Image (cartoon, rainbow, N blue to C red):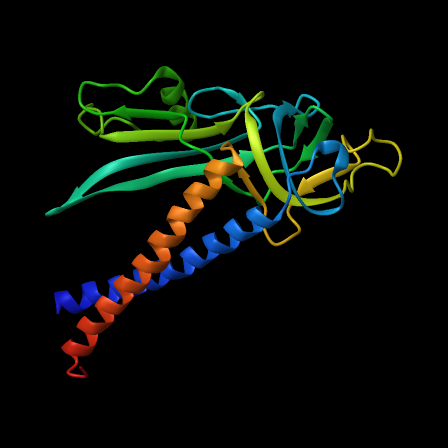
Length: 249
């Protein structure tokens, strides 16, 4: 009975991987076929730009775990829990937040609203706490504010980990999104492309990364092969187990 349960789960995971692989393939093809524009030459519609992050009118955020000034952050607080023979990491709190910022190149700046974007950036901060190791003061302050205890009933530290990613001023970003009129600026009152145009969600894809385009395409190529072929192989293998179990093969 246990083997059939694993086979059913594996079949579902394989299908998900196969679907995810095709989604990555579509993103790869869109990046390959969309030319990189300078800010000055941006046209309405799907655009691809690369630029340096600059805050928009004192709208900087503060990342919750490390206290870094940023225009976007994502964090997770996890606890290691055991139940019988099984142990696993459980996410007990996570979140993300972004604010509009400028992407600047040699020709000018354009406003980017990260709301709704698929943002792929590495973890900037990794902290752990366990017996004998306290989390940093900045993390303790956050935990206190959120009323998340890092000590057990007996006063010993729980085994926890804290991760955080952020986009900070002066970071270099790749942005693939939809350029449109900024609805919050009256026509003709903003500087060319700096305030009257905003890149955001609206087209097929809204994607932000801190990698160069060449590295993004390399990663996507590996994703496509791994998830499409790996997902298909896993689903077929698990399907065979299911059919054999029910005497259909």
